[in-house]
Length: 93
Image (cartoon, rainbow, N blue to C red; front, side, top):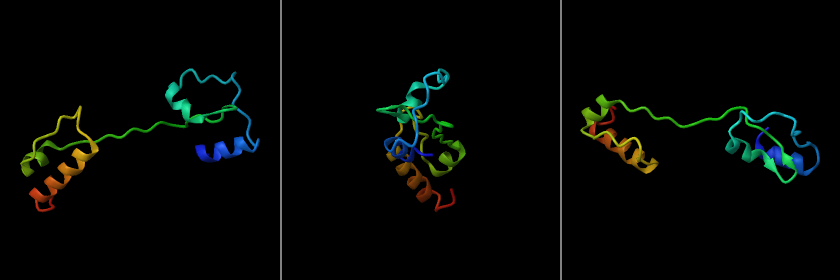
């Protein structure tokens, strides 16, 4: 169930909160926050995802575009750089 459904079911009393006896100590607290309701913990994640981007330095070099600082670039930078690489390689990269 996604959180919207969990919250709806909890609101109707169709689900009970997860008992405190269930060990969630190995789950990152911030991952548990979305499942927390006024009545208690209603859901736990079955996984956590993250975004990852891999850059091919040879493509950047071919396009004449410097590699960005991977600690500070933004999604706006990603969009701008992607367009620049596409334009500089006539869509081949």
